[in-house]
Length: 277
Image (cartoon, rainbow, N blue to C red; front, side, top):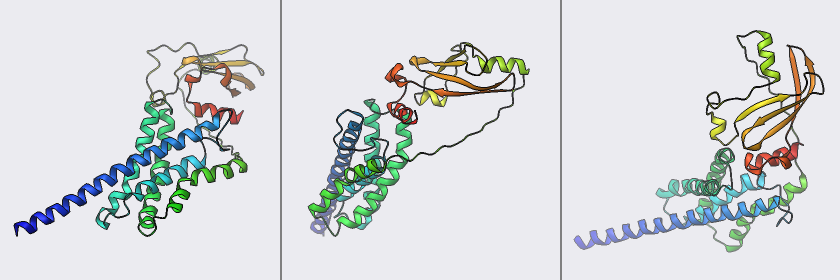
């Protein structure tokens, strides 16, 4: 009886060890693949990209890369028993978190970009893992695995040649201020320097956006130039397009990436600004 128990114990220990090895191998390969894909897609911003893509802000990277990460982690769980299937499917979450944490730690990504990408990465990696656990149990052909690893890089050129679609959204907000109209108008047209005491920490600043400092306006008239100044050297040039004294002030906003330090904003924000302008 004792010998039988020892035998069962050895088998159970071997199964646990097998699961542990597969877990770490799948997690490691998933993270390495994610970082490698990020490197390749980021080179789109250089003068000599490896392949034509829309860069990191693309469907190929944001959706298909985490999908493949899920498939990679599932590949190493193909022989795991059904009782551990949920565990296998959930492993990609840790892989994509690893990719994002490493990217933020080395300042390859800003916090705001990481938070925006995390939900997409998590969902797509789970879908990939769910499909992978079922597919790789029946087919572990190396040709199939090679094709899976290349999915984002196959999709990228097609997305690049299709180009970007343009959409314009309008947002309207209203705030009631208990103050004389003249006083409100003075503070809208020109903003005096904001002190540290007034400039309280907000969620946007925690996410990495610069603090507002002041706003200058050369003349209160159509064609007037208003300069909105933030810390870290960031500023926006605003041109007045419509003005009704003490009633309406409308202006365009333009940022010049060439005259602003790169560290002022996350590079993907500047990428969006370049596309818009």
